[in-house]
Length: 429
Ligand SMILES: [Zn+2]
Image 1: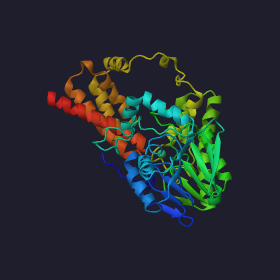
Image 2 (image 1 turned 180 degrees about the vertical axis):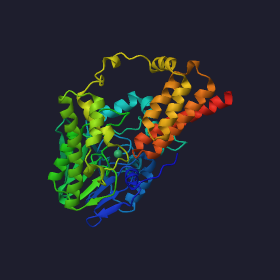
Image 3 (image 1 turned 120 degrees about the vertical axis):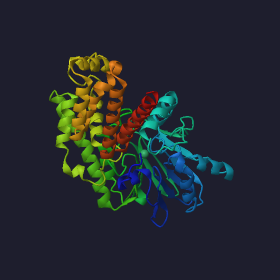
Image 4 (image 1 turned 90 degrees about the vertical axis):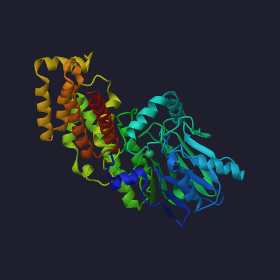
Protein backbone atom coordinates (compact mmCIF):
# COMPACT_ATOMS: atom_id res chain seq x y z
CA UNK A 1 0.00 0.00 0.00
CA UNK A 2 1.39 3.44 -0.92
CA UNK A 3 1.02 5.77 2.03
CA UNK A 4 1.06 9.53 1.87
CA UNK A 5 4.30 10.97 3.24
CA UNK A 6 3.54 13.69 5.77
CA UNK A 7 6.11 16.45 6.30
CA UNK A 8 7.39 14.94 9.56
CA UNK A 9 7.77 11.55 7.85
CA UNK A 10 9.89 13.21 5.16
CA UNK A 11 12.10 14.40 8.00
CA UNK A 12 12.53 10.86 9.18
CA UNK A 13 13.32 9.55 5.70
CA UNK A 14 15.83 12.33 4.93
CA UNK A 15 13.78 14.10 2.25
CA UNK A 16 14.89 17.73 2.79
CA UNK A 17 17.91 19.80 1.70
CA UNK A 18 21.32 19.41 3.33
CA UNK A 19 22.69 22.57 4.92
CA UNK A 20 26.12 24.10 5.44
CA UNK A 21 26.73 26.67 8.18
CA UNK A 22 29.41 28.73 9.92
CA UNK A 23 31.19 29.73 6.68
CA UNK A 24 30.78 26.27 5.19
CA UNK A 25 32.88 24.63 7.90
CA UNK A 26 30.02 22.50 9.23
CA UNK A 27 27.44 20.52 7.30
CA UNK A 28 24.23 18.67 8.03
CA UNK A 29 23.97 16.15 5.18
CA UNK A 30 20.43 14.86 4.78
CA UNK A 31 20.05 11.11 4.74
CA UNK A 32 18.31 8.46 6.68
CA UNK A 33 19.69 9.50 9.17
CA UNK A 34 21.73 12.62 9.04
CA UNK A 35 25.50 12.88 8.74
CA UNK A 36 27.16 15.76 10.61
CA UNK A 37 30.45 16.96 9.10
CA UNK A 38 32.98 19.25 10.81
CA UNK A 39 35.91 20.59 8.79
CA UNK A 40 39.27 21.39 10.37
CA UNK A 41 42.57 22.32 8.74
CA UNK A 42 43.82 18.73 8.99
CA UNK A 43 40.67 16.81 8.18
CA UNK A 44 37.08 15.91 8.88
CA UNK A 45 35.13 14.71 11.87
CA UNK A 46 32.08 12.75 10.71
CA UNK A 47 29.15 12.11 13.03
CA UNK A 48 27.05 9.16 11.80
CA UNK A 49 26.66 7.62 8.38
CA UNK A 50 23.28 6.99 6.72
CA UNK A 51 21.42 3.82 5.79
CA UNK A 52 23.50 1.87 3.24
CA UNK A 53 21.08 2.69 0.43
CA UNK A 54 21.92 6.41 0.86
CA UNK A 55 25.65 6.12 1.55
CA UNK A 56 26.88 6.72 -2.02
CA UNK A 57 24.78 9.87 -2.38
CA UNK A 58 25.78 11.22 1.04
CA UNK A 59 29.48 10.50 0.39
CA UNK A 60 29.38 12.29 -2.98
CA UNK A 61 27.62 15.25 -1.41
CA UNK A 62 30.30 15.57 1.25
CA UNK A 63 33.00 15.31 -1.42
CA UNK A 64 31.34 18.10 -3.41
CA UNK A 65 31.97 20.34 -0.39
CA UNK A 66 35.40 19.27 0.85
CA UNK A 67 38.26 16.98 -0.18
CA UNK A 68 39.87 16.76 3.26
CA UNK A 69 40.59 13.30 4.73
CA UNK A 70 38.33 11.75 7.34
CA UNK A 71 40.07 11.72 10.73
CA UNK A 72 37.26 10.65 13.05
CA UNK A 73 34.09 8.65 12.49
CA UNK A 74 31.64 8.83 15.41
CA UNK A 75 28.62 6.52 15.65
CA UNK A 76 25.77 7.94 17.73
CA UNK A 77 24.51 4.35 18.20
CA UNK A 78 24.50 1.05 16.34
CA UNK A 79 21.22 1.19 14.43
CA UNK A 80 21.32 0.45 10.69
CA UNK A 81 20.56 4.06 9.72
CA UNK A 82 23.56 5.46 11.64
CA UNK A 83 26.43 2.98 11.81
CA UNK A 84 26.36 0.98 8.56
CA UNK A 85 26.86 3.50 5.71
CA UNK A 86 30.63 3.89 6.20
CA UNK A 87 31.96 1.83 3.24
CA UNK A 88 32.65 4.70 0.75
CA UNK A 89 34.72 6.53 3.38
CA UNK A 90 36.88 3.48 4.11
CA UNK A 91 37.28 2.72 0.40
CA UNK A 92 38.49 6.26 -0.25
CA UNK A 93 40.95 6.09 2.68
CA UNK A 94 42.43 2.90 1.28
CA UNK A 95 42.64 4.28 -2.28
CA UNK A 96 44.26 7.52 -1.11
CA UNK A 97 46.63 5.78 1.29
CA UNK A 98 45.41 8.00 4.14
CA UNK A 99 45.75 7.01 7.80
CA UNK A 100 42.82 4.98 9.06
CA UNK A 101 40.37 7.14 11.03
CA UNK A 102 39.54 6.65 14.68
CA UNK A 103 36.06 5.18 15.07
CA UNK A 104 34.32 6.29 18.27
CA UNK A 105 31.28 4.64 19.88
CA UNK A 106 29.95 3.50 23.24
CA UNK A 107 30.92 0.02 24.46
CA UNK A 108 27.31 -1.16 24.24
CA UNK A 109 27.52 -0.87 20.44
CA UNK A 110 29.73 -3.97 20.49
CA UNK A 111 27.07 -5.93 22.42
CA UNK A 112 24.51 -4.64 19.93
CA UNK A 113 26.54 -5.82 16.92
CA UNK A 114 27.00 -9.23 18.58
CA UNK A 115 23.25 -9.39 19.21
CA UNK A 116 22.56 -8.62 15.53
CA UNK A 117 24.77 -11.57 14.57
CA UNK A 118 23.17 -13.89 17.16
CA UNK A 119 19.65 -12.97 16.05
CA UNK A 120 20.42 -12.51 12.36
CA UNK A 121 17.32 -14.23 10.96
CA UNK A 122 14.96 -12.84 13.61
CA UNK A 123 16.16 -9.27 13.04
CA UNK A 124 15.90 -9.72 9.28
CA UNK A 125 12.27 -10.74 9.78
CA UNK A 126 11.29 -7.98 12.20
CA UNK A 127 13.03 -5.30 10.15
CA UNK A 128 11.20 -6.44 7.03
CA UNK A 129 7.94 -6.13 8.97
CA UNK A 130 8.80 -2.76 10.51
CA UNK A 131 10.08 -1.19 7.29
CA UNK A 132 7.82 -3.02 4.84
CA UNK A 133 6.58 0.13 3.10
CA UNK A 134 10.09 1.42 2.32
CA UNK A 135 12.04 -1.81 1.78
CA UNK A 136 12.31 -2.42 -1.94
CA UNK A 137 10.92 -5.67 -3.35
CA UNK A 138 14.35 -6.78 -4.57
CA UNK A 139 16.05 -6.04 -1.31
CA UNK A 140 16.16 -9.04 0.95
CA UNK A 141 17.28 -7.28 4.13
CA UNK A 142 17.49 -3.84 5.68
CA UNK A 143 20.87 -4.45 7.26
CA UNK A 144 23.62 -7.06 7.11
CA UNK A 145 24.79 -7.86 10.67
CA UNK A 146 28.15 -9.03 9.35
CA UNK A 147 29.07 -5.59 7.97
CA UNK A 148 29.65 -3.91 11.34
CA UNK A 149 32.59 -1.61 12.02
CA UNK A 150 33.84 -1.88 15.60
CA UNK A 151 35.09 1.25 17.38
CA UNK A 152 38.80 1.93 17.87
CA UNK A 153 37.99 4.31 20.74
CA UNK A 154 35.41 2.86 23.14
CA UNK A 155 33.45 5.02 25.58
CA UNK A 156 32.78 2.95 28.67
CA UNK A 157 30.20 3.00 31.45
CA UNK A 158 26.96 4.79 32.17
CA UNK A 159 28.59 8.17 32.70
CA UNK A 160 31.07 7.65 29.90
CA UNK A 161 32.49 10.71 28.15
CA UNK A 162 35.32 11.24 25.70
CA UNK A 163 36.82 14.39 24.26
CA UNK A 164 39.52 15.22 21.76
CA UNK A 165 40.95 18.27 20.06
CA UNK A 166 41.55 18.55 16.35
CA UNK A 167 43.23 21.74 15.05
CA UNK A 168 41.87 23.86 17.90
CA UNK A 169 38.35 22.46 17.81
CA UNK A 170 37.15 20.56 20.87
CA UNK A 171 34.85 17.60 20.43
CA UNK A 172 33.03 16.51 23.60
CA UNK A 173 31.10 13.23 23.51
CA UNK A 174 28.58 12.15 26.15
CA UNK A 175 26.72 8.88 26.71
CA UNK A 176 23.03 8.89 27.69
CA UNK A 177 20.53 6.10 27.26
CA UNK A 178 17.38 6.91 25.28
CA UNK A 179 16.27 5.12 22.13
CA UNK A 180 19.08 2.67 22.77
CA UNK A 181 21.58 1.80 25.50
CA UNK A 182 24.56 2.72 23.29
CA UNK A 183 23.58 6.34 22.47
CA UNK A 184 26.19 9.07 22.46
CA UNK A 185 25.88 12.73 21.47
CA UNK A 186 28.44 15.33 20.42
CA UNK A 187 29.01 18.91 21.53
CA UNK A 188 31.45 21.15 19.64
CA UNK A 189 31.77 24.30 21.82
CA UNK A 190 33.72 26.43 19.31
CA UNK A 191 30.94 25.84 16.77
CA UNK A 192 28.14 25.92 19.35
CA UNK A 193 26.80 22.86 17.58
CA UNK A 194 25.27 19.71 18.94
CA UNK A 195 24.73 16.38 17.15
CA UNK A 196 22.02 14.42 18.93
CA UNK A 197 21.80 11.13 17.03
CA UNK A 198 18.35 9.62 17.56
CA UNK A 199 17.94 11.30 20.97
CA UNK A 200 16.25 13.97 18.84
CA UNK A 201 14.48 12.96 15.60
CA UNK A 202 12.14 15.90 14.81
CA UNK A 203 9.06 13.81 15.70
CA UNK A 204 7.73 11.81 18.66
CA UNK A 205 10.66 9.89 20.22
CA UNK A 206 10.94 6.31 18.98
CA UNK A 207 10.38 4.69 22.32
CA UNK A 208 8.46 1.49 23.05
CA UNK A 209 8.88 -0.04 19.59
CA UNK A 210 6.64 -3.17 19.61
CA UNK A 211 9.36 -5.46 18.21
CA UNK A 212 12.41 -4.13 19.94
CA UNK A 213 14.09 -4.20 23.34
CA UNK A 214 13.60 -1.85 26.28
CA UNK A 215 14.11 1.89 25.81
CA UNK A 216 14.67 4.55 28.46
CA UNK A 217 12.20 7.45 28.92
CA UNK A 218 13.68 8.97 32.10
CA UNK A 219 17.29 8.87 30.85
CA UNK A 220 16.04 10.33 27.58
CA UNK A 221 14.51 13.31 29.39
CA UNK A 222 17.74 13.87 31.32
CA UNK A 223 19.81 13.69 28.11
CA UNK A 224 17.68 16.52 26.67
CA UNK A 225 18.34 18.62 29.77
CA UNK A 226 22.08 18.03 29.55
CA UNK A 227 22.00 19.16 25.92
CA UNK A 228 20.02 22.29 26.87
CA UNK A 229 22.73 23.27 29.38
CA UNK A 230 25.16 23.64 26.48
CA UNK A 231 22.90 26.33 24.93
CA UNK A 232 23.59 25.24 21.34
CA UNK A 233 23.04 27.57 18.39
CA UNK A 234 22.95 24.73 15.87
CA UNK A 235 21.43 21.28 16.28
CA UNK A 236 22.00 18.43 13.85
CA UNK A 237 19.21 15.91 14.67
CA UNK A 238 19.32 12.17 14.02
CA UNK A 239 16.55 12.78 11.47
CA UNK A 240 15.18 16.08 10.15
CA UNK A 241 16.73 19.33 8.91
CA UNK A 242 19.31 21.39 10.78
CA UNK A 243 17.76 23.47 13.57
CA UNK A 244 19.17 26.95 14.15
CA UNK A 245 18.81 29.45 16.99
CA UNK A 246 19.27 29.13 20.75
CA UNK A 247 15.62 29.71 21.59
CA UNK A 248 14.24 27.32 19.02
CA UNK A 249 16.66 24.58 20.03
CA UNK A 250 15.92 25.11 23.70
CA UNK A 251 12.20 24.84 22.95
CA UNK A 252 12.39 21.57 20.99
CA UNK A 253 14.74 19.89 23.48
CA UNK A 254 12.61 21.10 26.37
CA UNK A 255 9.30 19.80 24.94
CA UNK A 256 10.92 16.40 24.22
CA UNK A 257 12.26 16.26 27.75
CA UNK A 258 8.86 17.27 29.12
CA UNK A 259 6.96 14.56 27.22
CA UNK A 260 9.42 11.87 28.32
CA UNK A 261 9.14 12.98 31.98
CA UNK A 262 5.35 13.06 31.59
CA UNK A 263 5.04 9.51 30.24
CA UNK A 264 7.47 8.11 32.77
CA UNK A 265 6.12 9.89 35.83
CA UNK A 266 2.42 9.30 35.07
CA UNK A 267 3.02 5.55 34.56
CA UNK A 268 5.06 5.36 37.78
CA UNK A 269 2.33 7.23 39.68
CA UNK A 270 -0.29 4.72 38.51
CA UNK A 271 1.91 1.71 39.29
CA UNK A 272 2.18 3.06 42.84
CA UNK A 273 -1.60 3.34 42.92
CA UNK A 274 -1.81 -0.42 42.30
CA UNK A 275 -3.12 -0.15 38.74
CA UNK A 276 -2.55 -2.71 35.99
CA UNK A 277 -1.49 -2.10 32.43
CA UNK A 278 -4.92 -1.86 30.80
CA UNK A 279 -6.14 0.76 33.25
CA UNK A 280 -2.88 2.71 33.09
CA UNK A 281 -2.89 2.63 29.28
CA UNK A 282 -6.45 3.88 28.85
CA UNK A 283 -6.14 6.51 31.58
CA UNK A 284 -2.94 7.76 29.94
CA UNK A 285 -4.75 8.13 26.59
CA UNK A 286 -7.31 10.36 28.34
CA UNK A 287 -4.77 12.70 29.96
CA UNK A 288 -2.33 13.26 27.06
CA UNK A 289 -1.94 17.08 27.03
CA UNK A 290 -2.86 19.06 23.90
CA UNK A 291 0.47 20.90 23.95
CA UNK A 292 2.24 17.59 23.24
CA UNK A 293 -0.41 16.34 20.82
CA UNK A 294 -0.15 19.45 18.67
CA UNK A 295 3.58 20.14 18.83
CA UNK A 296 5.16 19.94 15.39
CA UNK A 297 8.24 18.16 16.76
CA UNK A 298 6.19 15.50 18.57
CA UNK A 299 4.11 14.19 15.69
CA UNK A 300 3.65 10.40 15.90
CA UNK A 301 5.03 9.61 12.46
CA UNK A 302 7.40 6.82 13.50
CA UNK A 303 7.11 6.10 17.21
CA UNK A 304 4.01 7.24 19.09
CA UNK A 305 2.62 8.06 22.54
CA UNK A 306 0.85 4.70 22.90
CA UNK A 307 4.16 2.86 22.39
CA UNK A 308 5.84 5.17 24.91
CA UNK A 309 3.35 4.09 27.60
CA UNK A 310 4.44 0.48 27.04
CA UNK A 311 8.10 1.53 27.32
CA UNK A 312 7.62 3.28 30.65
CA UNK A 313 5.54 0.40 32.05
CA UNK A 314 7.95 -2.28 30.89
CA UNK A 315 10.84 -0.46 32.54
CA UNK A 316 9.48 -1.49 35.93
CA UNK A 317 7.13 -4.40 35.27
CA UNK A 318 7.18 -8.05 34.29
CA UNK A 319 5.07 -9.84 31.72
CA UNK A 320 2.08 -10.55 33.98
CA UNK A 321 0.35 -7.28 33.35
CA UNK A 322 -3.42 -7.75 33.60
CA UNK A 323 -3.78 -8.55 37.32
CA UNK A 324 -6.26 -11.26 36.31
CA UNK A 325 -5.08 -14.80 37.16
CA UNK A 326 -6.99 -16.06 34.11
CA UNK A 327 -4.06 -14.60 32.16
CA UNK A 328 -1.33 -16.27 34.20
CA UNK A 329 -1.52 -19.59 32.32
CA UNK A 330 -3.94 -18.72 29.50
CA UNK A 331 -5.58 -21.26 27.19
CA UNK A 332 -4.90 -21.13 23.46
CA UNK A 333 -6.83 -18.30 21.84
CA UNK A 334 -8.13 -20.78 19.24
CA UNK A 335 -9.60 -22.97 22.03
CA UNK A 336 -11.30 -19.94 23.63
CA UNK A 337 -12.74 -19.00 20.24
CA UNK A 338 -14.07 -22.53 19.69
CA UNK A 339 -15.89 -22.38 23.05
CA UNK A 340 -17.43 -19.01 22.15
CA UNK A 341 -18.56 -20.46 18.82
CA UNK A 342 -20.47 -23.16 20.73
CA UNK A 343 -22.52 -20.40 22.39
CA UNK A 344 -23.39 -18.55 19.23
CA UNK A 345 -23.55 -19.33 15.56
CA UNK A 346 -20.59 -17.93 13.57
CA UNK A 347 -23.04 -15.90 11.46
CA UNK A 348 -24.07 -14.00 14.62
CA UNK A 349 -20.44 -13.05 15.29
CA UNK A 350 -19.87 -12.11 11.66
CA UNK A 351 -22.94 -9.88 11.56
CA UNK A 352 -21.94 -8.25 14.86
CA UNK A 353 -18.37 -7.60 13.64
CA UNK A 354 -19.79 -6.04 10.44
CA UNK A 355 -22.05 -3.77 12.51
CA UNK A 356 -19.14 -2.66 14.68
CA UNK A 357 -17.10 -1.97 11.54
CA UNK A 358 -19.89 0.15 10.08
CA UNK A 359 -20.05 2.13 13.35
CA UNK A 360 -16.30 2.77 13.11
CA UNK A 361 -15.51 0.62 16.17
CA UNK A 362 -12.61 -0.97 14.35
CA UNK A 363 -10.72 -2.46 17.27
CA UNK A 364 -13.80 -4.17 18.70
CA UNK A 365 -14.73 -5.39 15.22
CA UNK A 366 -11.30 -7.06 14.99
CA UNK A 367 -11.75 -8.83 18.33
CA UNK A 368 -15.14 -10.22 17.28
CA UNK A 369 -14.20 -11.31 13.76
CA UNK A 370 -11.16 -13.07 15.24
CA UNK A 371 -13.49 -15.46 17.09
CA UNK A 372 -14.49 -16.94 13.72
CA UNK A 373 -10.99 -16.87 12.23
CA UNK A 374 -9.31 -18.40 15.27
CA UNK A 375 -11.99 -20.99 15.97
CA UNK A 376 -12.41 -21.90 12.33
CA UNK A 377 -11.99 -25.71 12.40
CA UNK A 378 -15.66 -26.67 12.07
CA UNK A 379 -16.78 -23.63 10.06
CA UNK A 380 -17.66 -23.80 6.38
CA UNK A 381 -15.09 -22.18 4.03
CA UNK A 382 -17.58 -19.57 2.72
CA UNK A 383 -17.96 -18.05 6.20
CA UNK A 384 -14.20 -18.14 6.81
CA UNK A 385 -13.75 -16.31 3.52
CA UNK A 386 -16.27 -13.67 4.58
CA UNK A 387 -14.59 -13.29 7.98
CA UNK A 388 -11.13 -12.92 6.41
CA UNK A 389 -12.48 -10.41 3.89
CA UNK A 390 -13.98 -8.37 6.71
CA UNK A 391 -10.72 -8.51 8.66
CA UNK A 392 -8.81 -7.31 5.61
CA UNK A 393 -11.25 -4.37 5.22
CA UNK A 394 -10.98 -3.43 8.90
CA UNK A 395 -7.18 -3.53 8.75
CA UNK A 396 -7.17 -1.43 5.58
CA UNK A 397 -9.25 1.21 7.35
CA UNK A 398 -7.00 1.13 10.40
CA UNK A 399 -3.89 1.59 8.23
CA UNK A 400 -5.55 4.60 6.59
CA UNK A 401 -6.14 6.19 9.99
CA UNK A 402 -2.76 5.30 11.52
CA UNK A 403 -0.06 7.99 11.65
CA UNK A 404 2.78 5.90 13.11
CA UNK A 405 4.91 4.32 10.38
CA UNK A 406 5.72 1.34 12.59
CA UNK A 407 2.11 0.69 13.63
CA UNK A 408 0.85 1.12 10.05
CA UNK A 409 3.41 -1.37 8.74
CA UNK A 410 2.44 -3.95 11.37
CA UNK A 411 -1.24 -3.61 10.45
CA UNK A 412 -0.62 -3.60 6.73
CA UNK A 413 1.74 -6.60 6.72
CA UNK A 414 -0.94 -8.65 8.37
CA UNK A 415 -3.54 -7.35 5.91
CA UNK A 416 -1.35 -8.50 3.00
CA UNK A 417 -1.09 -11.96 4.53
CA UNK A 418 -4.87 -12.11 5.03
CA UNK A 419 -5.33 -11.16 1.36
CA UNK A 420 -2.98 -13.98 0.35
CA UNK A 421 -4.99 -16.43 2.39
CA UNK A 422 -8.23 -15.18 0.81
CA UNK A 423 -6.77 -15.72 -2.68
CA UNK A 424 -5.57 -19.19 -1.71
CA UNK A 425 -9.00 -20.18 -0.37
CA UNK A 426 -10.75 -18.79 -3.45
CA UNK A 427 -8.48 -20.80 -5.78
CA UNK A 428 -9.07 -23.95 -3.74
CA UNK A 429 -12.85 -23.51 -3.77
ZN1 LIG B 1 17.74 6.79 13.24
